[in-house]
Image 1 (cartoon, rainbow, N blue to C red):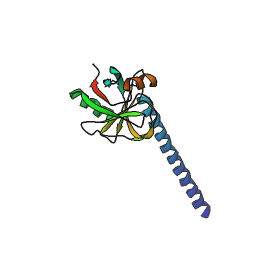
Image 2: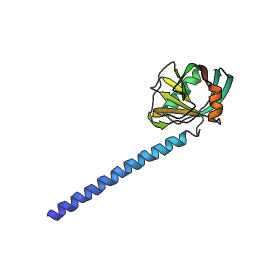
Image 3: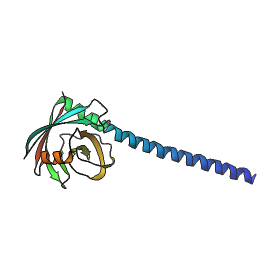
Image 4: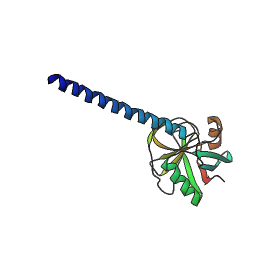
Length: 165
């Protein structure tokens, strides 16, 4: 009888370990899926017209496949959004959105061109690296870090976000 309980306990221990491994595998899959969504695999494309000390520049971006990006896109379908943005930390431009959006924060290491939702009510355009819990809204298409730094400049900018037509 004692052997039976030991075998039964070992069985439940193995089942528990398999379930935990499955959960970690699911989390890893979601992380890979999230990374793939930043490659612009959806139809949500926007334009960003930036006015800075270097002039006026229009860029395009692909939005991520998440509820935050979808809410931002729906907002843009109603009207363009103009955001006054300031430099923060020598790695991003940040400005306040006219309304809060749902956020899906996760640990992210940014790169140049990432468009990030911060605290649900701020939008940032990254031109350098930073790691934190953010919501990735999208990525600016086909631009190098050096090109983006030149466009954004060192001072304040105005960014006009719109649905790409």
